[in-house]
Image (cartoon, rainbow, N blue to C red; front, side, top):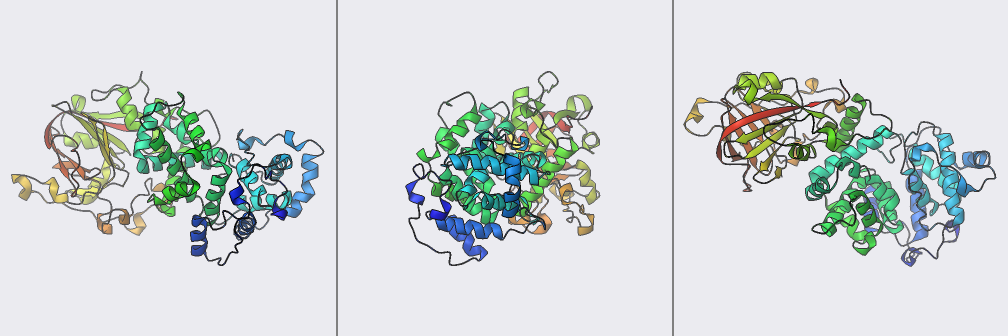
Amino acid sequence: MGEYSRFIDWDKMDSTIQDQDAKELTSTEFQDLKQLARQGYWAKNHSLRAKVYHKLINDIPCRTVTPDAHVYRDIVVKIAGKRNSGSLPLPEFVDNSLVPTYCLNAEGIGAVRKIISCIASQFPDISFCPALPSVVALLLHYSKDEAECFEKVCRILACNDSSKHFIDQTFLAFESSCMTFGDLVNKYCQAAHKLMVAVSKDVLEVYSDWQRWLFGELPLVYVARVFDVFLVEGYKVLYRVALALLKFFHKVRVGQTMESDNVQEDIRAFVRDIAKSVSPEKLLEKAFAIRLFSRKEIQLLQMANEKALQQKGITVKQKRQNVHLAVHAENFKSEIVDVKKMRDIWSWIPERFALCQPLLLFTTSEHGCSLSRFYSHCEGHEPTLLLIKTTAQEVCGAYLSTDWNERKRGGNKLSFFGTGECFVFRLVPEVERYEWVIIRHPELAMTGPEQGNHSSHVSDPPSATSLPSDPSDRLSPFLSARHFNLPSKAASMFMAGGMECIIIGGGDGQALYIDADLNHGRTGHCNTFNNQPLCSESFQIAIIEVWGFKDTMSN
């Protein structure tokens, strides 16, 4: 421990990580390192962890000119001067972040500020990096001196491998990561998400804390275990652990009264005291049990969220719009749902569209029961929200990710299209959101005696030349057939439209069919699941509304 103990107050450290096991790293192959990191192979050996970190960080591909230990020694006196390092102001880009002490001694606490100040002088392109104080404080534990810690952090920041991403360094990247995390919660932690919607005024404000949970609130023993895997596997690990934290929070707090009226503070307190309920091993076990989307698909979602923010001019920190209030009580009027229910629906949609306000495009009470008018009012809008109220007072609907104009690709035949972000939901008699699923059996659309009079058509997937050259133009990355165990030709069968009917593949086996007269509908199962039905198997429609998404930045 000697050479790595300069900045540590060992009296505050957990005795279980003070070089209990004398181990050596036997392999440096990626798969071996991945397994060893997840197993905590070097977690109880401080010196070994320091050596592993040195190797992993040294192997990060960096810019040609990356500041190193020599640079630090040259600039630190000029930047820090003879002032008490504990009083050094932090750069604005850390956004008043917590500076965790992580059992550092007084010299270590001061060193964190000096190192961050020197990093700010060498990285003028960093505009927003709230995770930096935590990363510096952690790496001081595994550095011989300040200069070595500075070099380690600089290498992480200067990584130039486009397939790797370690720390957000701009507000745009940070904000889009918060939106991406919200999308992942919506997909993988639906029970926790439902709780967040119920107890918070702005659910995205809660999810914007996700990096703070990891780099600020999480105790040292936990964040070090996370960092072990993070250095090997990258940014996706952070999403996994944050999702696991939210799952554990929900498990502990469900049915209990919140400790405060601020769920953000409750989650922070839970994470700070996580040792009372969850061990580091259990946290990582839960994190890696989540069948998360691939790294590439998450990157596509992140790109889509970044693009949505850029289009709205949100690239620097500003006062956040309360996303829940995107549905303004004074401006919203629907014959099917009230403001509260619309806000609940808004909490389910992808975060990049939750920035928008609802815009009524079509209603049968005003535009009549004509499928052609339905199409003419909805075409050119993407995404859209379909709401249906039956004569039995049931209310259901669907979030539709793709422009209805896409149906024309099938000519006069029933054509299937859409992306995996489509879903259906029920609001009355009970609220239920059905997860994404593809229409597996198009023939279910044609029931009854008229079945023989219609033919269905599955349009071929778009050719490589017709796909946007910029991956971020594909607003939904969830088109991978492997998630649904379907052949590629069926990979976009979420919506269908023709002059005979509309079909929407919902979730958990639910499918919604609306006849051409817009007066009758029915539900069916796309697959073999047998969940609570979306609404009555056959129903008469009282009113249909279709809502678009109005950019809040436009006039």
